[in-house]
Image (tube, rainbow, N blue to C red; front, side, top):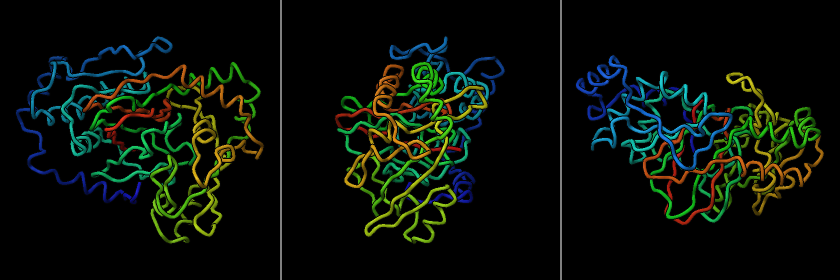
Length: 364
């Protein structure tokens, strides 16, 4: 993500709260009274794009229970997040896999940073990821900065490395003129459909896993959806340090004249979700095979079975169709916050007509 965030730095950001950001005693009292009365700051809503998956609305949608928020009520929203996260938001996230918060008074990157902090999840540094990103404020980064005419295929965030976020947030600061949705799909349902249609392929996938190969330049290439250079991928310009950090990820490096080839794996492509007790389609297979393409990379060579044998193109194509058939794409509105359980949901990005500014934050 462009810099290494240590636990000490993260803690230091949370230690001192400026006076203008402190919750007033009146707000605290109102929230306490509401909780005692059994009411909630949030209420569930329905959108036309939602779909029922195994009887559960996907994604879950929360809006203010009292209608549109008053101007300057961000503090009240943050206090409600802190007080109702465990009782209200997380049960929905566990059941649905994704929660869209709409209509709340977050409007800027700084507001979003405070909202992420209010949820209380530890930050995960973006080490080993492929997407070009830049830090905006605090623990907030841009989402994939690849050109707007490029579609980003479905993937679990950082599925190609062993240390990946458990949760991720997206925030719409500027809604697109058209397009630009972030489609989401339930991973266990993709596994179910793939196993029904291609049982032998899935059996081999579970046995051998996947190997991901990517060639990186030194600097970031914003024209590529996988254009993160090795300097920002490993947060260093020192090859020895890069090799040390790659080794911790289980990744091998092969240096070239103007960059490096990274090889990761074999790494599992199907995982077991211990919270929900089910298998999940936890990989970036379709994304790598169809989208890891630029001047340095051939997508067909970007991912193989763990034994080195090639993936069948027809199965990859059918998997892509299943992902599209089962996904939900809710058009962004300014101020939307989308919380995704990375163990449950894959996401992608559709092409768009600018302007569009969607920000992200990764959490352990």
